[in-house]
Image (tube, rainbow, N blue to C red; front, side, top):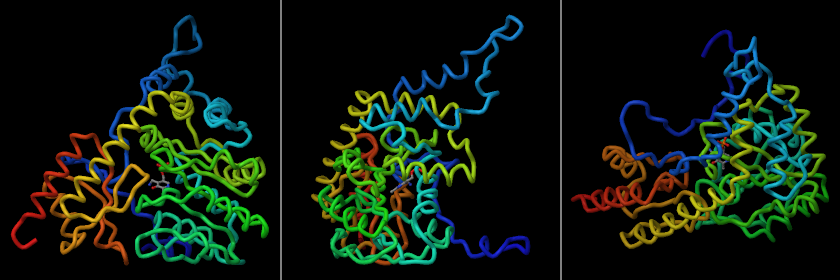
Length: 371
Ligand code: PMP
């Protein structure tokens, strides 16, 4: 707290990101990063930015591209996304990670003074933070006992809806037909449906093919998980041109250069290298499913997941104790100390070796006398 803070700053409850440990070495299963390296094409594209240059007095000057501002329209990147997803570049909004894109989304499409926007009570914990930042009233809709979203609960008057599909941290997904039905309902009242698709490549159905028929449907994507590029910070939204134009209006009232030259080059290479990413993400899905089976055999409850993580609980051991016991054994997972989910852990899917070590640790913990 400081006397220099304005009221807005005082009243914020910022998002708390998962731990990025600097000291001890952990098997890191806490922030849904992809365990495999990025495509070699991504690294080559970034290196190319650094070494290819104009001549300066006959010398090849390294880093020349860093001297200039990046392309504010992100043309090359938007063309790459458009080609990869079968849309037009004008239907793509680029950003510095999908968190930033989501922040702009709340600012562009949700109102502060009308009907509350809706999202599930158990979902990505950044949504209420953005809503508070932009002074948007929101109402959370409880997910069912088994963490499913009942789409009919959202068929009420609202200022718009945001749903993560698959949802985080549960991993459960919704059928496309449910989401399109909701999009149609919202369109009648000029409201937007945002589908946060951060984990969609791990088994959920894509909504991108439907953005042309649904001008109020915006899908938000990230390369952090699907393309092993959490460190590069690349996200994007796909939707109708009018939605994309709205996002640019917000962005350009804030910072016109949200993607730097390295992110533009690396991000473009990533979305175009489908073969590489299909292969590693298939491995992640296989590891997820075998890990789920092993956990169930041990007695864990495992929520069915279409994401690159599992949401699990063990009868009789609190989420906090499980989290801490795993941490003591060098395995970092995510625990949310929140109503309804305090006894659950979200476990990102690592390599099969990571998950074997995780399973061994789980077995040791549950077999401990007293547990
Ligand atoms: N949406 C969801 C549902 C997420 O879990 C995350 C990752 N924390 C993001 C968006 C943001 O991802 P990024 O900013 O790395 O693109």
